[in-house]
Every structure is written in structure tokens, then in C-alpha cells.
Image (tube, rainbow, N blue to C red; front, side):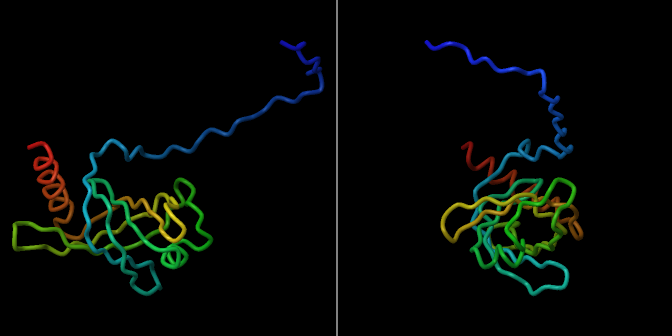
Amino acid sequence: MGKPLDIESGNAKPLRVKPRAAEPNLRDQQRVDVKLPVTLNRPGQAVIECEICNLSRSGMLIRCTGKVTDVLMPGRRTPAPGDWIDVTARFEVPVIARQTISLAARCHIAHLRRIARDEFHLGIRFVDFEGRGFDYVDQYVHRLMADRIV
């Protein structure tokens, strides 16, 4: 072992650490893997088609290309907590074997993760549904969870 470094700390200034902004922990909801088409629409922009990778009662994970990511999130920067990117999501979930219901939800893009060269995952949090949309998502997720257990 070497000698300890002789560093004077007399001139050191105290370090102030900024507290992390409060943000909800969305990991408390169980997620189910799905492969569903979804359309996303930012205010004033064209509709973009993507794919839902997983779904929970509180949000969804979207798979998209770099080009789509650039349209939804200019600069590809994850939004700061509280400074979310608003989008409207439209997708369908099966209610029974041969019947699906169309849902529309106001959402916030909460995070961005690069998966491969031209593949990104966007974490999207549900804010509000039209009609009984939350109930349908809740029932669908519950049914998929029950099927996984059996």
C-alpha cells in the first residue's frame, strides 16, 4: 500500500447537492408484455404510428425508430420531471376474444432509452382517458396477468 495523499482541504468549498425533483414512482404497477399498434399525436403535429412493448395500469412502453423519436422528442433528451412532453395516444385492447375497443388517452412522455442503433423505447405515463378507458386497460392487464400465473 502507498502513502495517503496529503491534500489540504482548507480551501475547499462545501458542495451543494440539488435535491432530485419529486416524481411518481411508476414501477409499482405490474407490466405485461404486449405487441399492440398505437398512434401518437403531439399537439400541432402529424399522427405517428408505433408499437406498444409493455402495458401497465399507469402507462406503456413504446418501441420506435430514431426518426420517430426525433419527431416526438426533438434533441432526443429525456424530459425533466414536471416538464413532460404531452401526447395523445390511441390504441385498441381486446375486451373479449373477437371484440376490441378503441381507447384514447392524454399522456406524458416520461423517459427515453436507446436500445439499438435505430431502436428507442419511450416510457409514456397515462394522464387521462376518454370515457372508461382506464377500466378497459385495467381489465386487460389484469386478464393478461392472470393468464401468466396459470
